[in-house]
Length: 197
Image 1 (tube, helix red, strand yellow):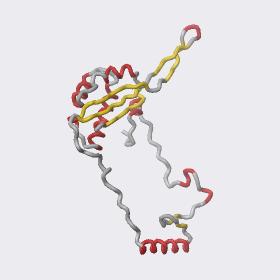
Image 2 (cartoon, helix red, strand yellow; image 1 turned 135 degrees about the vertical axis):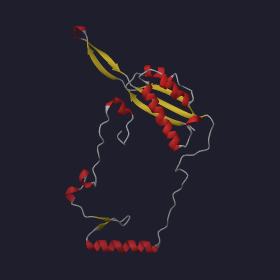
Image 3 (cartoon, rainbow, N blue to C red; image 1 turned 60 degrees about the vertical axis):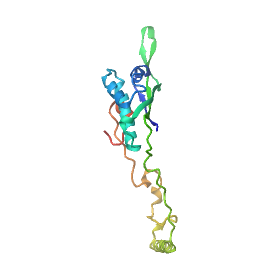
């Protein structure tokens, strides 16, 4: 079973990241993590974080063991390049290329296991509505029409009368979208989480 992971837009050039990635390609996951811990390069930090993230997905979603995984593929591609300009002599300007990297990794099992993903096997059961239940819904709708509360024809839920001036946009919604605080630093941008670490 293949487990894939990717991290985009790392602010390190792909050439520098490939020096780290080439050292661990094809190794067992435990050996690769130990080897990365000894390498003194800036690119080691995002690579280790990506491997830990994919490992957590493999253990939690697919119930796989860490000792049974190895790095089948790990590659580094070019991301978008940002251009800055440096002033030079005689009024000229030369470009500075701020390169970015995209790291993608694929884990595979040494010995294939028979585990399946959680939650996919269960089928949704359909329930038939009794005539008595449908009659009760119709009675409630009639009561709500008498009291002046509008009712939704599809499911029988009551809808409060709304002011036509307030219809549309965020004013018609019950809750406005919550803005999440900005992550600190370029490294936090790559591995954004909703929890707000």
